[in-house]
Structures are given as structure tokens and as C-alpha cells.
Length: 484
Figure 1 (tube, rainbow, N blue to C red):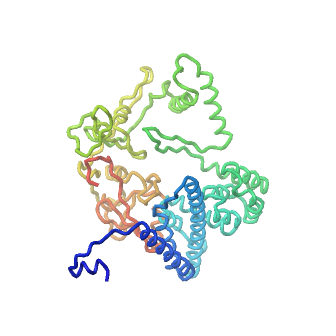
Figure 2: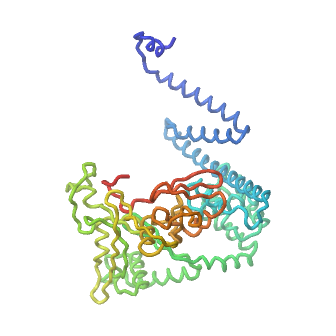
Figure 3: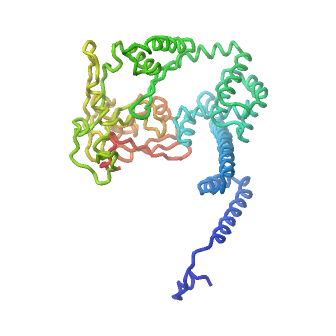
């Protein structure tokens, strides 16, 4: 009878903790049991396959003590191989999903051009990435499994990473299946022998030689994708990137570089290096200002009165002290929020409203004030009976959602749509309005997709496979005092 049973019967039997040897024996038994499950369920059924993956995940969640520096390196190498193998398994599962959905819709009599709509969004949700990345994963999976078996095998055994195998697929995207297979066969000995940039260059060279006409056509088509984008960077900075035809991109960079080099040693620019001068010249030439900071801006800054005025009436007890002056994070970093960018420190927000500039080309600043609930952080509710979301209601929804409401999409809002369809009695209100990118809005109209409001701002998104994802808008102004 065990000590626990003795205690349950009222017997005073001391319980001693297990020894290290007992712990090791228990862990070894669990590992053996897990291995047995792996070997017996891997080929039984779909539920068994899922169970196998759950066991592998749980094993990796444990703390695998290495015991030596060499063993640490061995673990890192093996874990990298496991990451590649997992990516290969994802590729196979993604292609199987695409094939099964396509076959099911074919059996249902759906026309070829209308099949498999929205599967990129489903894959994106499952991978916790944007729908665009989900569609790219579907294309990559189809290419690797049907046209580039050597690359898939290299991904399985760790010679290629998921990133590098994706580059191989992208560089051959303009070729027909036979051309992709030929390059894959030719490059097989090089997989795992060189870095990703060099490998991509070698594949690109072969792809250009294989079908120069197709490459030129692909280049002409790619010009339609030229764009300028902005994305946040740490410390109140941002990346401004432009996708341009190769010649134009080099011409722009060379013009900035040549001018910055000629200015680098003047007295006015002695404190700035060539790369900093290039950045300043870019701003000046794009905005027409003679000073890089003298930029006309319209700022939709969402902030509290304390952030705007630089005052703090209360300091929460849990706010961390951030420097030797005793200032709390709440004093300095009661963040303002810029839609499309994210949080910016209060001091930086105030500086944007009063930038340093010369007197000959003064910058104009437009401030749009936004009213939010001081407790929940949500934009004040505005209702209307119109079918379209316009005026103050539209601005409120855009400020509330900030980006596409599909989890992990992160695309800018293009459409404001009814979560519960207007045709089925849905109201044109803040509680039923949802900000979506164009792609996600069209996807939700496909059979099996449902966006269900659960309260004023949250939505449940259900996909055709029955999986449900919760969508909650981010707080307008994240705050240590705010209720999550």
C-alpha cells in the first residue's frame, strides 16, 4: 500500500520526495512511453498523427539539459534540423489540404476557376501569419511537392531552411514545371553547401538562362507591384522602403550617395556620416523642404491630456522606475498612438507637434483629436442608420481597429463591412462594423466563413473547417492603468 493511501486512511506515514535517480527513471519511462506512442500511432489515422505532433511539441517544451558546451552545440544543430523537418511536414500538409479542398469542391460541381478560394486565409490563420503569407505558403508547398522534390528532400533533412527553400521557389516562379524540375535537379548538390544569398543568386542565374523570354515577361509584370511602404522600427524610428525596378533603385541610391559623399566633410554636416546624410537628402528631396525636419504633417495622434501637456496626476504603484531620477515609466512613456504605426513615447509625440525647422520653410502640423473611453480605451460609440460606414463613424472604426481585423493579417484597412451582414438584418453601427483589408473582406463572403460579433468590438472568425479565431482590436493607447 502506498504512503498516499496510508495517509488517506489516517496513518501518519512521512512522504519523502523522489530522488534524482527516481526522477530520471520516471522521465526515461515517460520518454519510452512517448516513443511507443510515436511508433504505434504514426500510421494509424489522422487523430494519431495529430497526437504524434503533440508529443513532439511537449518533448521540445521540456528543458533539455545538455551537460557540456559541445552538447549545447549538438542540440542547437539538431533543433535547427528539426525546424527544417517541421517546415517540410508543414509543406506536405499544406499541399494535402489544398488537394483535398480542390477535390471536394470538384466533386460538388464547383467550376475550376472558383475552387479553393480563401484557403490562403485559412492557412494564414493556422500559421498565425497574414493571408498573403498564407497564400505564398500554399504556392510554395505546391511547387516543392510537385516540381522540386530535391529541394523538399533537402528541407526535410535540414540542408535547406524554410527561408532558403522559399527563395529557391521564388527565383524559379516564372518557369514552367519542367524548367523548375530541371533546375532543382541541377542544384541538388549545392543544397546545404552555401549561404542563402549565394544560393538564390545561382538559382536566379540558371532561371534566367533557362527561359529568358519568360524572365523578361515576369519582370514586366513585376513592375506593377512597385510600391512604397512604411513599417515601425525600434526607438521611434521607421523603415521607409520602396520596391522599384532594378535600374531605378540603383539610380536613386547612387544619386543620394554621390551628393552625400560631396557634403560629408563640410562644416555644416561634420556631425553626420554619409548614410545619415543620405537619409536627410531623401526627406528633403521628397518633401521639398530645405531642412529634413521641416515636414508638413497631418497627425492622427491619439493621446491623453497628460500625454499632450506633459503632466501626470497619478503614478501607479506598479509602474517601474526607469532611471536614477526616480521617474516612473508612466511619467515618460504614457504613449500616444499613431494609426498605421503604433505607440510612440509622449515626448516624441509632443516633438512631432512642434518640430525644429528653419524659418524660411516652416512646417505645418494638423492635429486631429480623438475621444476615447478613459477606462477601456475604446473610441466613443457612434451609431447611425446608414448602410455605409461614413463620416465620424468611419473614422471611429478605423481608429478603433487600426488594421485589418483578421488575426495576424496586419494589412491596412480598405473596407468597413458589417460583421453580421446588412442583408440579413445587420446594423450599420460600431458594434457591427469591422475594418478589413480588401482580400479578407472578399474572403469572408465565401461559403463556410462567418464573422460573429461577441460584443461591441470583438469578433469570432469561423473558417470552413470549423476552426474559430478570436479577433480583438488593440487598445488605442496602451496604458499601465488600463484594464486589459
